[in-house]
Image 1 (tube, rainbow, N blue to C red):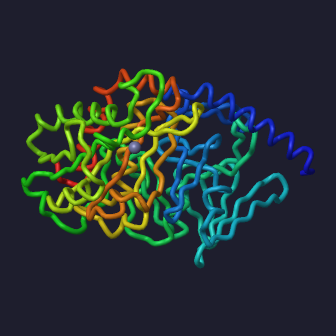
Image 2: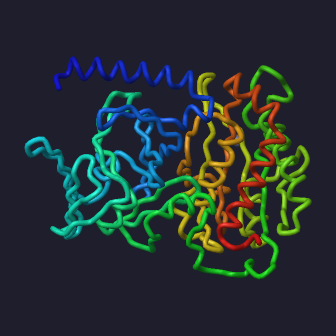
Image 3: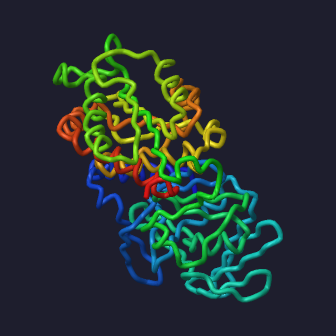
Length: 395
Ligand SMILES: [Zn+2]
């Protein structure tokens, strides 16, 4: 492709992206994908825009993974060519298009539109047929393959958990084909590891931190003071969450503050460490430009495996809380973000994350947040219950 065309396509993509950003806030719309293959247009409703390959986050905006006949399918070009030591070849013989993937002595040859593939020369049947698919949003064509089937045959570990897909070189465990929707519905996951101190009727110990406070206002906006001051917003969310936790005997919750005061950052993580908490969650509101938008959850990737407790890692906690928070805000999904140097994420000795609900600097997001504290409190509670349930702590 010559560079002028490339440039024009780049501009077109930007335009699509800009239009997309304007349209996005409806959650439903963002989860729909329109594609074309086999000479017909198709729409799918359950999509995933982020995949983690060996822990590295890959964005699939505009070309998401989608659920087709109970299997998640996604663009092989992007997913399997990024970060993995895998050979990828798309070829054509006669009218047949083939995709050949090789990984550690395994060779998988797939044909366009055919469920039957060949693995090291032997016939194997994939969950659904791979297709060369045109994504209508970007008008680009990708090989879209059933991810779990392909991973399994290439000896890659595939995991669907709390609405995110993880593909890893290192194999841990695998589920049978066709359990995708069941796993998604029940959130079943590996919980076989580490301490069981809480699985036998003991309370789940939680520390919830309303960011900032007292002399530290956090981010502020000019629109609606003192309501549009971060420390007041975080406290209102935490107080709403407290209403739910107060009624649920599964939990023992410590709050770093429930008034307008300023505990130091050290006091916050020390509270969690001294109470031997099972989870630590910090509540914040983001701020940058007036056009910045979306929900994100921060965690420390480096600390995540080291602070694993009850089988829960910070990454999993962050992913779960991000899903629940984002569903509650309806803002664009900025995903989970590695921020290893924040004190409350760096020095906590248990799974921890920091939720940024939305941008106070964005007037529309501020307005929505300022009328949604009850919903955010509930989503915080529900997210915690979900992850506890996934790991057998909440019965
Ligand atoms: Zn903050």
